[in-house]
Image 1: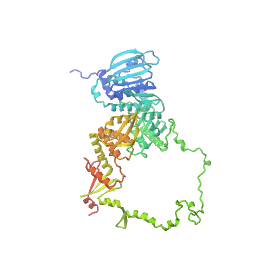
Image 2: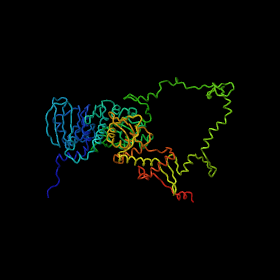
Image 3: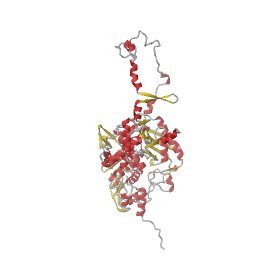
Image 4: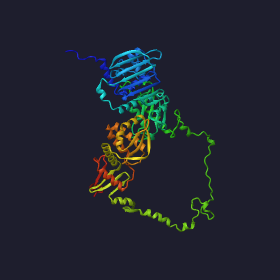
Length: 618
């Protein structure tokens, strides 16, 4: 019998490796930008076409490569970052494995143009499916330009698994933002199909955050800084009142490398525990600088997971640093990007002996009821021309004002001489066998006993099924706003709303684009209340949609209907009239699933007369 184990060809091995390294266009872009950062570039341009499916081009002004290096960089495990195994524990660069370029070249058509600053000519190299097509000297600017065309052209199964352009572009934006946040000293631009998406000049970390997420973030940021023998921590956290319902804007960087670490995230959330509800997520952009020998980053193909030698100490440092910053953060916004000046306003520069406590002066002989006082001298008498004796004669009329108020209440004598006052409105409700309990539950009498209805869960169910019907029929009614509202979103949310616009219009919204990352809201659905503004309604809709998508993996329409129903329903604590309660019950029992809330919990609880009699032992 012949041997059956054989070495795979390099082209097949590279395609297998590409499955780990390059999962989508955003993965390829991440590897290319990190290589540009490692080359020492301070200016990086990114050009995208068709969300990266047709073209991903990264241009930098880094050190460039020689002709030999240009060819070697596409070989497997060829790298300039490490030389021996010990170097794995002293890594300060983004890349180190030498797999990315070989993997990209195996599944795409790649063109590389590079030139070192000291050379007169550069090199142009073309590769398709790991095969070198051509290599020739050219004249080009110093640095490197890499074009990745037709990603997954030779693996159609992988290409078919790619999502739509809007989804893939959101992933590209996420990867771009992470690298841009970690390197505020580098100038970045990102163009998609000829349109400039990001233009990020060099600056401080705070400037970079504001350029990425919008000017409104200037008043949301609180600085965090802590230097210890274990780690150096710096960055910004968001003020609690600006927390969102999704985890979107949470970034951890270790030695300038973006990571995902639930343990460290728990440290930050623990610090916010006393000032934030459990279903809200704050903004944070935190950088940890640590000795590379005390961590291991070679534990995941995407290098987003890290092992630490002393996790508990790092957890405690992050938690205490964030908690201290929350305890002293200022509430007034500042225009200074480099310094938080709000704390200085709380400090007085006077000496203690110069501070004079306030004094109170009064006249002990003053008597407002003395006969010699005029009405002008008595401050609480406002009508100077009115006869004072007429007021004293008609004092009984004061009780006529109070009597109607007293007549609105009646009493019940209970055992033990306890007196309970009942409002006439409540008696009127009881006459109709329905009333509200603690402004949260609705009690309605039925033949076998009574039923208890959660008003918020019931309204959520009603709105959810109504919105689903609007999305199916595309006939949501719109209520025009008297004054159109403008809302500016970050790039990812802007692309998400653009993708969802047809369904958002079907719900009854009237929204149109207005410049870069900005929408104008001309109208909202007519069948929802106006307890929140149009801008807040859209922002809550986006946050709820993203939360449903990540947690429940629902389809777009179901996620939209759930998000809008939860954010526009009546809440616990809202008093309802008799007609409103009757209408709510009628609409609830017209639903397809009246007994179950959107979270799967019961909406209605029924209590029978037999259960009540057992409680009183009858």
